[in-house]
Structure formats: structure tokens, C-alpha cells
Amino acid sequence: MQARPTLIVLAQADNVMPAEQCMLPHESLALEQFNTLQATLMTADATGLNVVCVAPSHRVNAIRRLRPKLCVLDLQDTGNANAQDPMARAVATGVMASSMAPGWLLLPSHLHRITANTLNIMAKALDEHPIVLPQYQHISGYPLGFSAEFYSELTRLQHANDLRRLLNRYPGCHIDVQDPGIWGEDWATRVPPTVMPASAPITSSGQARS
Image (cartoon, rainbow, N blue to C red):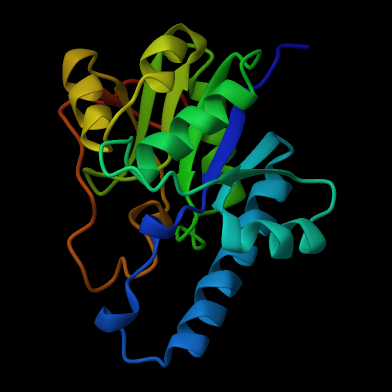
């Protein structure tokens, strides 16, 4: 049986909306964010993939109590302004912890509306393409998929924008999915994330689309 990629859930603090940008009290915001993370982890579990969760120190114990069998990695605050930013460190930490995987799917924890089917489609696509990106209605989203040949690049990330530069240097394959959840929590009211141009889109059935 062919090995499958590891799904890295990125639960670092920068993935969530700052309290000052939200109408909820701080305590309610923290609960909302944690509930969103729980939902994302439930979807991750449903894929059958190996799952690694990278989280800030203040969340690690709670996640481990909730999911005792889950590999939860502590993204400690270095206190160094010149160090990697949290997103870059989270990706590098997750990839290094699963160095024997044939590839990785990078999933921000706030994408709790994404379906397990979409994640499995992206995992399958990595069998044939070194970089894969999902798209819905011609607009890209997450997770980003990388094969094992990008181990060195992923573990050397210094900034989240380095991922964008990596995609610009090595254009990936867009995979058509019927899932607006790839855009994130507020997909219905915001401009979804876009990534660098990739090769011709592929349908979820594996056929190139003209």
C-alpha cells in the first residue's frame, strides 16, 4: 500500500483573528477559536491520514487532553524578533517531525468547513504532482500540498511569504474541488486567498480541464 502524506494542522496564534478585530469578549473569542480548532481536527481525523498539529504553548495541554492520541507539537515563543515568524516555524516544525512522510498537506486550523473528502482528494493528487493546490470556482485555497522533495525548502522557511515565493518558483497543480471550505471560515463574505499561478487545473476525478 502506497504511503500517504501527513496532514499538518497549523494552529499557531497567527492563524486566528486578533481580539481587537472581533466583537466578542476575549474569553468568548478564545473559546470560539478553540471550538473551530476542534472541528478542524475532527475533519482531519476523518481523512485517515497521519495528522500532526502544531500549536502555541498556551493551547498544547488543552489539545492533548482533548486528543490524547494526536501528535501535538509545541510552537514555543522564541522571544526573538529576528526569528522565523510563527507560520514559518509551524510549517518547519510539523515537517521536521514527520520527516519520513512522502509529502505534506498544510492546513490552517481555521478552515473548519473544509471536507474530509477534499483533503483526501488533495492527498491523492500528491501521488502524481510535487505541489498541489485546491481551487473552487477558479479561486485557490488551502491546504497546500508538497511532496517530500521539498523537505529542505519547507524546513528552511523564515516567513510565511516564503511559501508564496516557493510556489512562484515551482508552480504547482491546481485541483478542482467542489468545496468552498478551502477558502476559510468566512468564505461567503470575503475575498478568498489566492496563490501564485499554477499549471492547468485538474478536476477531482484526475482529468485535466481545458
